[in-house]
Length: 420
Image 1 (tube, rainbow, N blue to C red):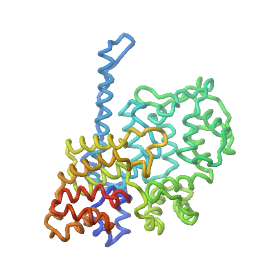
Image 2 (cartoon, one colour; image 1 turned 30 degrees about the vertical axis):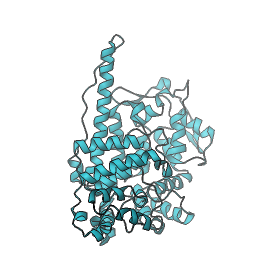
Image 3 (cartoon, rainbow, N blue to C red; image 1 turned 90 degrees about the horizontal axis):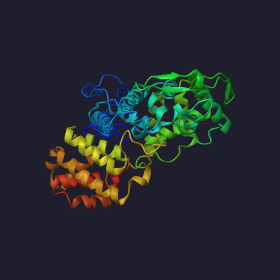
Image 4 (tube, one colour; image 1 turned 180 degrees about the vertical axis):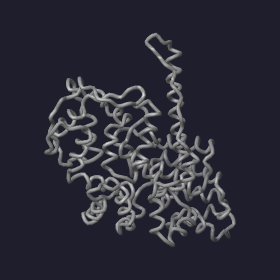
């Protein structure tokens, strides 16, 4: 639950433990969610128009409006992360955002990034075939990967290359440079209008035919996706990448991969894959092997402590994530954010300590404060859904047991809590 549901208090774990299958059924359902209903997507007004004769002030006003829309979108998504009552769906949406990493910095359109965000959420538990077909024509991703620059006269391979290398097959996934070039031909001639409409310009499009991974024809983007996903490298690559997100930084064994790929199946069922990951015996054995990313740590801590999603709390949350180097909607590159020990720098430790103290102060810690002093460390362990603290951590926590706020803040930055 800590890895899949973005932090849970011990009481929720106790409740779920009575019927884990029922919890999984509910968690992996994108049905009605009161927290989602309470945080509807933002609406954006028209940006100030600029022309070749616009003044510097008019151009700056447009830039300011674009920046404000981006901030509005980010604030909404962070609020949604805290408010969703089915957090697994939101966690998987963020995971797909990491997989199909696209940045507002280059796209420069909050409406297009919102459209992609909603697509990832709708498709989070569905057919990966449908998701990939939609994403290859997603206007935000197309801008991010220079799809508009790909013409028959001047081929641009960015989208075609990343479609194979990062999104579907992985490095060494059985494709060749010729497959990349042929895929780029199949994806040539597409444009994104100012309103986000995607259309094909026949004059800029390569007429084909193309041959990709042994499939020959005048390949539409959808036919190209089908040819790529039919590669035997795809299910192994996708299962491994999601295993790294949810289970362990260590590559799963062939036995584990066999079970995951069997669940994923010919229907390329994302929900079945996630369920297989979360219930595999090797998943339980991998506990404590993933360093929590800044988003996992901040969102998980605030949800666990039931910190209200007030405007001030979300503003502080945004600042913390920026300082820690992982701000949603702003991945550093098409590979997404790094993972592992890269999140454990000395500078990050100072930022986390200050954030932990703020979160602890904003939380209702009655369950810890009301516990006898001798039992407070155990009360914090239960609150944070940790089955134990190491001896070294318990020694550090014992020094703070007289101050519930300091005690919880210390636990939030302990090595025991920073891994899941």
